[in-house]
Image 1: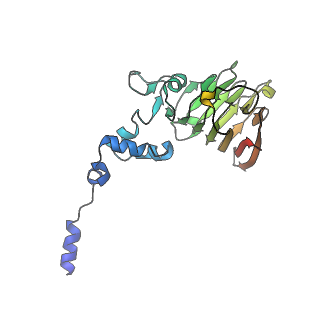
Image 2: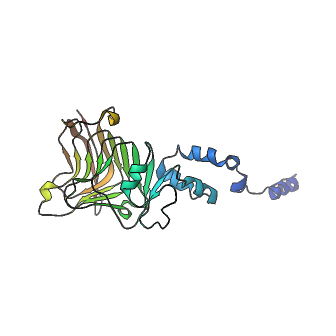
Image 3: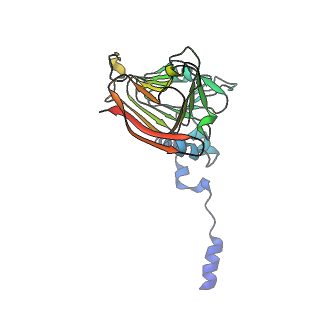
Length: 251
């Protein structure tokens, strides 16, 4: 009996990924499954499994990519700038912004639900730079999410929230030091004010939710001129940085 057991163990071969039942599905089915995964880290990690999964997880149907150094811009889903990617995106798309270098972002209006994610391992590897003279880097009038990004403003604000639910997760918001620091603010929310927002982009409720985010410079972390107020503030002091968790919501 012991010899038979040993022989069975020898005959057992480890299953390779090519024989896994999930790999019997066609590409369309697998991509549909991947579309339900959160972009970071789940969908990103699926790209590390094998060459086939890497191809499907990075398919333009699941991501739009911003790559300044891209040589072949005729490739579907690849854009040289954030503005062009936002313009081409459909509601619900995810835009992956390549790490390295600085991506210019000045007064880019986002009026559809999108997710913008930095492609580096850390947020400071993907930087959006708002040049002097611009009101903001990004202007939100729809529900959106930012993750793993650094947004820098020379003067003005990093993010301008006018409407919708904005989620900021694991980001760095920086207002560069300036004698006019009192005019700078990382986040400005005018939601619920007198400003008219097109009925095509109105959402149910306005809110800004910030988690695990570094906020540096400016007169205030958040400035509100609508009917939203700062709530549920939590701060964690690390060795070199301060991380914030808070909501800007109606009372």
